[in-house]
Length: 157
Ligand SMILES: CC(C)(COP(=O)(O)OP(=O)(O)OC[C@H]1O[C@@H](n2cnc3c(N)ncnc32)[C@H](O)[C@@H]1OP(=O)(O)O)[C@@H](O)C(=O)NCCC(=O)NCCS
Image 1 (cartoon, helix red, strand yellow):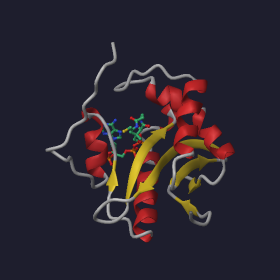
Image 2 (tube, rainbow, N blue to C red):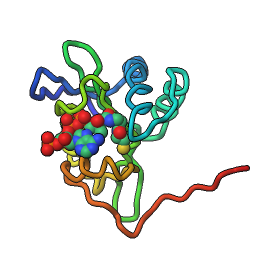
Image 3 (cartoon, helix red, strand yellow):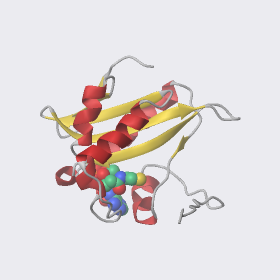
């Protein structure tokens, strides 16, 4: 989709495209702990996380970025490009940072790269699902709440 490129951020962080499933598998390692903690309190393990991220990887027009410090994967942003009536948009499916690296600018660094990259592709919007406790993080990255929108679920008995 786009050439491999590296972005050098503060604190020795390098962010690069995820161009191979092997890179995504390294991201899987940090996924369960990130989402098994507050505010999500999920119950992921390596197998279920791998299934989810592999599913996203196989989505048409997948795009992903990994953040590394000293060679170690410490964060990941993944999603896909989708057509929309007003032009293509980027659906950010996952953004997560290793628990021991949270609060050090990795997430906002990844978001800055995502925004820069999708702008170059002339995409018109980034859309994502999140929960209220995360709103401050996204608002600080320039996002706005779609107040008239919401998520509905139907529980299968
Ligand atoms: C949410 C997450 C991606 C943020 O990444 P991060 O590297 O920890 O955040 P940063 O250090 O870049 O923080 C940037 C700013 O957002 C704020 N922020 C970060 N996480 C926040 C949170 N959970 N709630 C409110 N504000 C938050 C920081 O305080 C910081 O503010 P400042 O610029 O005024 O200092 C990361 O904490 C994470 O992986 N959480 C678990 C998984 C998750 O919830 N992912 C998002 C799913 S929608």
